[in-house]
Structure formats: structure tokens, C-alpha cells
Length: 243
Image 1: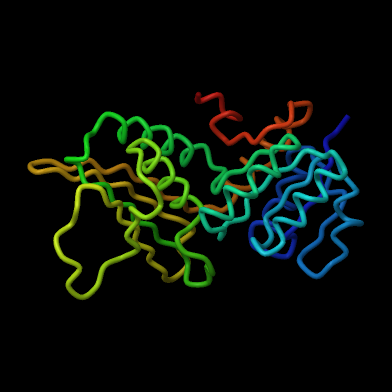
Image 2: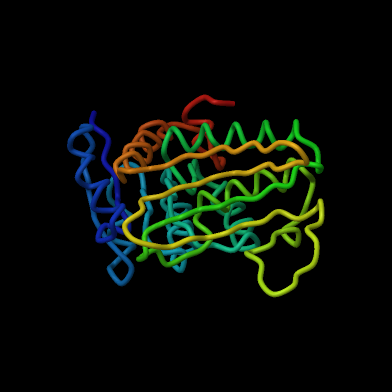
């Protein structure tokens, strides 16, 4: 039996791309809604909820998924670290895949970043640089936020270690801070670079996306994978069996 999805954020760039690829992958879009629509009626349809809407309504979508006992795919970004941590607890009540980026390449970048952050000591200064199109509303990107989470966890640092850009005379860089820099311009789909810089050498891990379809295809792959899974929050490393 073909999979069907309840798509939220259907009028956004990602939503439109997902809807276009779904048919190609043999997946039916049972409902297509956006913020301001009757979400309850839309979410009641389909086998899996796929959300690429706004972080402002993530809490409502999770609550409805829990009430409906329906699997959930979340690709929405823009949540604060504290807000995301709180929402993850609620999302774990159903089977849920939550990722800031659904491309295979980016999730390999996540795995490599985790390994590098564990191997390289605090002598290696960690910085993350991301660039997206001029219309993107949130910063840093969800992908960059996930990379930062990975580095902070590996180095046992809290969110207070983050430095969002630098200006004026901030003083010398400390070994316990992690820099994040967001660039915006043109029609860039998504570039992410993780830098580990030490005295005498520098390691850079970079992923560049040129087609939004890679994210949509990954999200639909996650929707197929999540069916029948036990309640918990998973990510694309689980979907791709990279753990």
C-alpha cells in the first residue's frame, strides 16, 4: 500500500519541492496545509505528518501528532536551543524524525564533525560558517545549529560557549568558545563549513547544496522509514544507518 503524507508548509519552497517529488517516489500527498489553515483537519489525513512550515507552530503540530498517535517528520528550523530541547521531549511521545537538514551529504558531514570534534582537542578552535539565499528568515540555519550541537556535546560545553559573529574589540579568542557566522545573499541553496584551526594546521569540512530536491528526497525517505518505528526522536543518521 502506497504511503500517504499530511504535508504542512505546502506553500513554502521546501513544501512545493516535496509535493512535486512525492508522486515520483510513489507517495500520495493526502493533505497540503500551511500556517493559518485548518491544521487539525489536515493532520488527521495521511499516514505520516511531514512538517516544513514555521517554528511558531511546531508545538501545535507535535501536540496534534501525539493526539493522533501519528508518525512525524520535522524539518522546520528557527527554534532556540532551549525551545528545541523542550519540544524534543514532547515529540518523543510518537515516532519522530527531526533533522535540520535531510540531505545524505549533510548527515555524513554531521557524522564526520562529531568524529573530528572528539579526536581534536580544544587546541583546535572550532568555527561554523553557513551561507544561504537572501530570503532565508532564520539564522543560524538548522543545519548549522545541529553542527553546533554536535561540537558542544563532544567538547562538553553549554550554549553559553557560542559566539555569534564578532565585532569591535572582543579580545582574544578563548579555547572554550565555538564561533558561528551566518552569511546571506543571492540564491544560495545552502553552504556549510566546519573549521578546526590549530597552530600550524587547519581542517575544513564543507558541504554545498545546489538543488533543494536533495532535502525533499531525504525527508520523504525518512517518512517511509518512520512507519512502524517505536515512539522516540530519531534523526537522519538513524534513517541512513550511519550510527
